Length: 250
Image 1 (cartoon, rainbow, N blue to C red):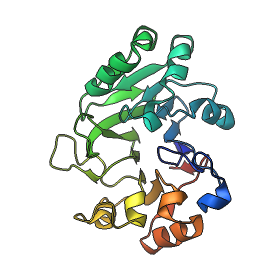
Image 2: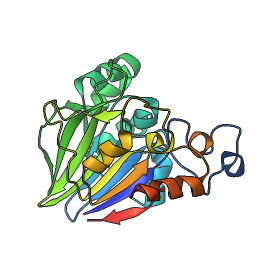
Image 3: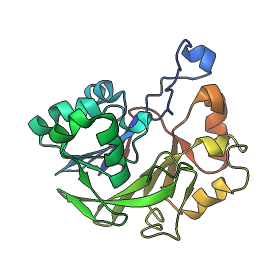
C-alpha cells in the first residue's frame, strides 16, 4: 500500500497570491490538501482540492475508485466540480459527511445528481477493493462542519489522514481510530506555531498517537516559517515535513 501526498499546503497554497517561493521562504510549491492511497486493487482519493486537476495529472493517476472528503472547506473540496464532471465516466464513488452533503446541496446543487454522493457515519468500515476506509471524528473548531479524518487499512497495514484538525476526539464514537498507524499524515502548523492552540499539548497528542511515522501537512511557510526551520523543528519532535508528490510505502 502506497500513499502519495497530492498537496501539503493550507488554504492559500504556497506561495500565496502575489508572492513567490523566495518571499514565502519555501523550497517548493505546496498545493492544497490531498492524499492518494493505492494498492494492487484500488486507488482512493482523500480530499478533492481546488488543485486536483493538476495534482492528478502530475501524479499520472489513471483510475480512481473512490473519493472521500474530510469536510467541505475550499482547500479540501474546491475541486469537487472537476470530480463531478467525470465521476460517472470513471465510476468513482464519492463519500462525505451529512453536513458536507448539505453544504454541497447549498453551494453546488448542480453537481449532486452527477456526483451521486454517499454519506457515512463515524466508524463505518467502507470497503474499496482490498482497502477499507474508516472515517473518524476530529475537532476543527467550526462546529457547523462535521470534520473527519480517515484510516485506510489493508490487512494489518494502516495509514491515517487527518490534515486539518485542532485535536483528536478519543472520547467520541470511533474517536481512537487514529492510534497506532504505520503512517500518520496530520495538520502540522500547531507543531511549528505554539500560539495556535495555546491551551493544548498538540505535540504531546501527536506523540501519544504512537504512529510508526508522523508526516506533517497543511503547512504554509509564509506563516509557519522557512522550510529549513520547519524541517528542523519537526525533526526535533520526531516528525517529518511532507512535500507534494512524495510517496510513502507501508
